[in-house]
Image (cartoon, rainbow, N blue to C red):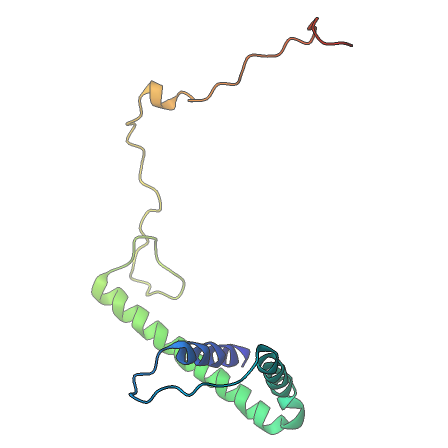
Length: 139
């Protein structure tokens, strides 16, 4: 349920920020930032207490969200299986829930031994060791 509320919120924000395609000018609003913040806080408080006031509507809404989520999952699985049949398995191996006839691809290719000894040697060498008994420092 929270996912749907977040999705609706961000979709509303995106739609509010998009320029309107109409020929009518947008009216200027005299709303301060403090007024907008207090209105947003009141809205969040109202949404948070919705399930306390309307238990039946909240229960029905959560059941609908679960049903929509299950349908979306089934649809995604159908799309995955369709793409897997028509495009072949992807290179990272077979994911969970994929068809049994698909065989996983190897994750790593065998070594081709193309590096020379100079390539294998470390490029960085530590500085020489410091001598502890220096005479220019006081003890």
